[in-house]
Image (tube, rainbow, N blue to C red; front, side, top):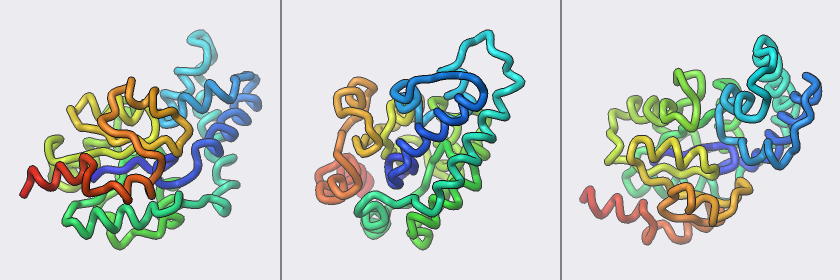
Length: 221
């Protein structure tokens, strides 16, 4: 099992939206929050290129990423996992599945998110943007997580909350179970290619045996 973190296990998508909005404003760009939210889930470099003009002075991109990181760090004490997030990971581990995180977050942010999640004992591997050449929607982060566990795409199901998660997994022919708790609608996630959609970790946990996770286990046994 591969899991995205922001917006999937931790309720942070709108915090990232606000922090990117502030970082852009500091750099002189007025980007609507709705547009930013729809781009959360990409790596920071991709998000900036997706939202800002191509003719911008790209020398400022790193400063904007740093500003976002500093602003987001101020929210670390208030971060909270979604209800039943750690229980979902534990249930997957109890079924005999390896559990890995595959997040576009920076390495330090992912360390904080893991501490908030409080499930380190059952997390077998974790990959951040620091472990990949390209960020989502490229699949490099997922590949890094799989390599850490010596798994191939046919062994894996991915759980994410953004269309960028679905697109990244599809490039490896990995099915994505999508959650709407990050703020993206079920219709958008299905249109992107999600194989199943649930509201949040608790909803997926309640339906675990009948989900694609249960099907994956049946095939492997």
